[in-house]
Length: 624
Image (cartoon, rainbow, N blue to C red; front, side, top):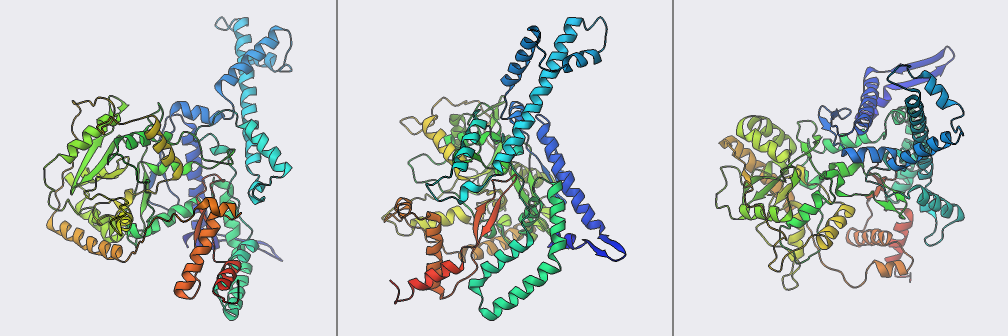
């Protein structure tokens, strides 16, 4: 709504007297902040090994950006070229000049003429400098040309609308050119600046899609009323909103991103985090020790560069040639939500050298580096074992402290300002919020046991919210499939366990033990914790979760029927809901927009006129 109010303040009309232009100060301020935020981020990307603090548009908080590693920053900036190609251009130019062939058409001589004369630069040195300068300029021009060509190629999306297994000649040619352009193995951010911007859709098309999505849910009278409202919006308010979004899209890398950040923070003021941020990731049941130091080690550093951004060394690719935006990979680590009375603030730290661990009501700080090197799996196992063997009891209020993050966000913001803004409580809370991520060592064992009914239900509920006080809700980040696959592959094929189930290698016994965090929570703080716990438990008990293995058939059979597995599941959901409730409802399915720069998700409305007609036919005994 904030974006809508700002857009309404930006308008102009053509009158017989001329152009009548209205622009509020707030609209100008928001456009300015969006542009500054976008360009600051670009400068941070260009600055090797740097980090800065960039406030999100419309947000009082600041979001420090994680830098790329120095070597990766340069390699990413010149992709699809490489440093060796620069050397080839320099040598080729020098060889041509040696053979009395001037590839610069006189530019080298003009550069040589502009160079200062003196004893420091001999004629031979001036010739070499001018040749290298021209070669570098020509190489940079070629890099920019190739990146522009790559952006044009990535703007083609016709391949996704073609029938499965049938590719047109144009798409085949496009795939071949993309493979040629991507011969050099890309890094995680190699394609970022070449990805096309998210386009602003036409108002008419947006309203048509909206009316189409609500048609199955409304009767004829309700639909006619909604269509009239849509026409009124299209004629009056929509043009001003559209002009604002187009102007914002010119100034920023993604015009939706600021709105996304505001919505992500707006969850906090009126809702508990676990209920509104519920994604979790479950690794398939495998016989590995819990916790697995190998999995933690492989998730942090799969290659010689110990930077969390290198978790997934290459971008996610569709068809093996279409890169997807890797922007969200930055926030898998070092990211937390700070509660506020009006809105939460998403904070992303430049770097973190430690891990926050919870076990039996106690909090620990575990350093991940020693001597500038990431700890080996055997070292992490030693540190975790020290935590498991620690007999000390929780401090007053410590055991259920995380319930504050699972209850309503406003009470948590008030308690944070009152009890955790100074002294040891602030230091301990900073250690948790500034950690690379938060790890809970559960006391209960979960997994699939056929002899124990409901075991998978309890497992799912544990992953979702635990006991409502042993999960740090703002630090729970949904896992993504690609890094998880990479992590499991690293754990399986590169690292290993001994026959006794321990990590390979000898741990450093002289490592300092994990640091126990100290708290001084007054009785009023304990009362606030208990109040939040009651709210969190009420929400958790209101969530039913039935999880069971289904082995009758899988996606292989669905694909052999030339049907999309996703479409099959969506239709099954509609049929199950109709049989249970006797009606349809507005349905949300997330769809990626990561083909565009800094894209996240968009809505797919799977409750359509076609799907409802199919469901009704399934309930009609006259149909086959």
